[in-house]
Amino acid sequence: MSGFVPVSINQFVKQYIRNNKSADGNVVRLAVEDALAAWRQGVRCACGKPIWVAGSAVAGYGCFFCITGSKEPEGDPEINEACGEFSFEEIEREAGFAQVSKIITEHPFDYLDRLEEVGFEWHDDEYDLLFEEEVKEERLAVPETENQRKIIDFLETGGPVTQYTLDAYLGERYSDSINIPLIRKYFKRANSNLKAILLYALEINPTDPDLLDDLSYFSEFDGILGELIHFYTDACLKETHMERFSLLAQDFHMNTVDQGYDALQALFSLFPTGEKGVVIQHLSDTIDDYEGSEDFFF
Ligand SMILES: [Zn+2]
Image 1 (cartoon, protein in one colour):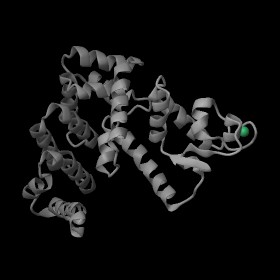
Image 2: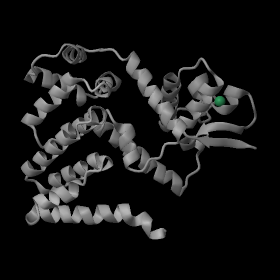
Image 3: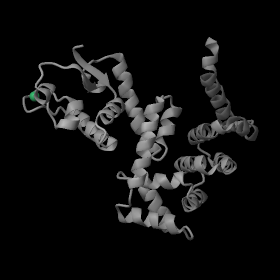
Image 4: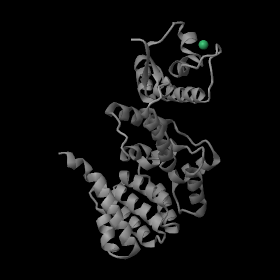
């Protein structure tokens, strides 16, 4: 077979660590991402040809010919984006990348689940690999900044939550250099001090969708569905801006539907008429359409 075999970054990392047992998946992944970023920026091999992203990740930046000494690739892997085939699929994939990075920014701690919600399907082994990597990252994560030390100190020792604690949490959550695995492991442990920060923050900002998302993620490990429902309902009552209300109602639905709760029905009994009623009616029409569409074919 001549030419490259297009592979995803996940596939490449998986293949590579299967063949190189001592390699660290995280390190390989970062190296591939770096090489891909370099390729996107037009970095070339010393000989002038475009770099071979997959090979450059493990052998240093170079083209296929300079790295392998072979005349042409024969079934060698290359990251699909760099295979150079421009197709409709490619455009869709690009749109996918934008969506993925948006989701990771908005849901730093629980992006794996979020990606699934919007229809990304992991193969079991891919998902396991990502999950294992998460666990490994979490085990290795240590506070690296003064702010992270402040947060971890509070999460470990507790005490009354103050504005100082909250500022540290929010500062980290919205930081460009957020230490995701460090904080995420406290979510996974359902750390009660972390919960105290979230509840304190929601008391001040009851309609903040990001805080409610964080509480939803927390509830996956804590099993506090009733409490989550209470906070979302309260937020929907308090939110007066219709666009933000609509987003809250959607989040409420998304974050509770798996546990069997019908948020839209509950909201509809709360707001049978008026502006909010119209929003809920519209949401329940469109969400039902979406969910029911598969049934049509069977
Ligand atoms: Zn070269």
